[in-house]
Structure formats: C-alpha cells, structure tokens
Image (cartoon, rainbow, N blue to C red):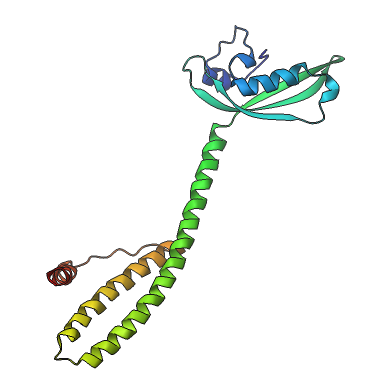
Length: 193
C-alpha cells in the first residue's frame, strides 16, 4: 500500500490524496513479481537493500514513468516492515542517454582524426609522385595540364582533411566568405574530361 508521497509525485502519477493505492497495481509485471517475493519473504532473507528499476503507469495519462524502487527492512513499534521507496528516474535516464551520445561523438571524433591523418599521409605521397610525373612529362605535354587538375583536386582533398582534423580536435570552425567561381570552374574542367 502506498502510505505517503509528496505532492509533486501525487500530481505526476495522477493519484488522489484521499484514495488508497497499491504500488504493485501500477508497475511492470516482472518488477511486481520480484517485489511481491521480497514483501512476503521472511525477515532473515534480507541481507541488503533491494533495488529495482521499473515503470509506473500513471493513472491519468497511462504514461510509463521510469522508477527506481528501493526496499529496506524497517523496525517500527517493535514490528519489522518491508518499506519500499520509489523515485522518479526520468531525468537520470535522460542524462545517461545524453552521456552515451556524447561518448559516441567523442569516439567518432577520434576515428575521424585517425582516418584524416592516414588519408593526409596518402595525399602527400600522391602529390609528390604527381609533381615528379609532371616534371617528367614536360610543360608542353597534355599530361602536364592533366597533372595540374590532379594537384588541384588533391588541394581540395587536403582542405577536407583539415576540416576532419578540426572536427576531431573539437576546435571551433572558422567561417569566412568564399568565392565559388574557382571551385565551380575546376569542377567543370573535371567533368569535361
């Protein structure tokens, strides 16, 4: 039987102050069974506090409210009672979810940083070979101008790697106005080939 609760809990759970309620009528069946066993177990069976996470179904909205129920033995007036104290853990669960999401973002940032460093190393090697091939081809060759396009694409890829590194280090992005004429012209030249 619910003996007492504060006004906030009464309002949140939709319970009337003048009526009698039984906690077991409003919680998940699995938790109900566990609590019933603990309430009716002999006093010697309690070696420590029993802690259960469950949901309470609010009477007025039928919403499932996450609760943590702690059951302790209490001696009152020479009698020993199993006393259950229920606490709304909605906010705690929200914060735990937020923490897990933050940890995932941290892991993604570390992964992005590792991939960016590896990709940057590959780009530098490719740029070096491209410069050598360009020199070997000579300035009059078609390959020479094709290598310019490759080097330009590598510059854009290097810029993208820099953005990934900025994300992985959680550094503030620096926004600035950009002229789109050059990237569009470069992209048009790539498509034309």
